[in-house]
Structures are given as structure tokens and as C-alpha cells.
Image (tube, rainbow, N blue to C red; front, side):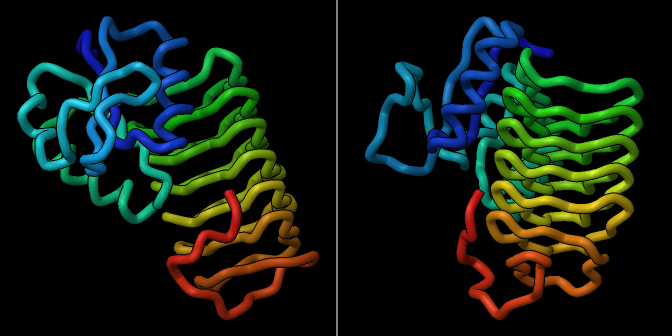
Length: 215
């Protein structure tokens, strides 16, 4: 761990990530990188460059990719890893992490989140505010669990899936890679085909792939 943290992404998600990093009190300085040239500061913290500038700081800083889009977050973090960057993991002091829980690099666990025993959280995941991941769950890389979502025991979520705000996944459910659950969706059967799923119980719909359906 280095004394300096650079957060890539100065959006709303970046603000929440920064608050967690400040509360962890592991870094002497925190700075942003963002590709929006119209902003110079965020939360009174300077923006020191664009994403392409990250390589300048590889030797002197830890990095965290605070980008909500799963695919973009994966691309940026993968590039950083290939350059030998040190990738931070951020866990809010008010999160509850059970015994024998594994958390991958580049993952953020936000305030009020609960991850119970023997669960595995991949790298680059977002476990958002007041979400719940029960025992023996497996979340593969770059999964986003939105605020208030609840996963019962022994759930497996495939890579780059998005679990919408307030959604519920019953126990022993498997969800394949690249799925998106709408806000409040309830999953009671395995999902084996990528796509967007909404409703109670959740059903697949045709939906624009790049459209957000609720955090």
C-alpha cells in the first residue's frame, strides 16, 4: 500500500468511493483522474489529469476505478493491472463482513452492506449501500449489486452482471454472465441466458443493452 490514492472517476459514484477512502484513513493524500475536462475539483479534491495520464503515477500511488459501468470499469482496471498498478480495495467501516469472506482487488463495499460467511466477491465489484449478500454466495468479477438488493444464501452471480436497486434473489440461484436485473425484480429460478430481467417473478425483456435500468 502506498501513501497516495488516485481515484479514476469524479462522478457521483466517485464521491461515494472517496468518502469511503477518507473514512478508511489509509492514505495521506487522495486525488482524482477524470476525462471530463470541464471540472477541476470534486469534493474539494483536485483532478490531476485524464485516464490516459494514470501511467505517470504507477510507481507512487494506489489506484481505484470508480466507474459505475461494468464494462468500462473492467477495461480501465485491466489496463492498470497490465501496467503493474497497485489496485486498492475499499470497505466502508460500517459494512459487515463475515468470516471467511474473500474480496477481490478493485472492489468497493459501501456503508450498511452485509456480506455473510464463506462468500466470494470477485475483483472490480460494487457492493452498494445497504445491500445484503448472504452465506456461500459467489459474485464473479465486475458485478454491481445496487443499493438495497438482497441475495439469499448460495447464490452465484456471473461476471459483469448488474443487480438492480431493491431486487431480491432467492437461495441457490445461479445467474449467468452479463445479466441485468431491473429495480425490484425478484428472481426465483436460475437465469441461463444473458439479457435484461424485470418484474415479480423476473422475466426476460428486450431492452437496449447500454441503457441503465436503475442502480
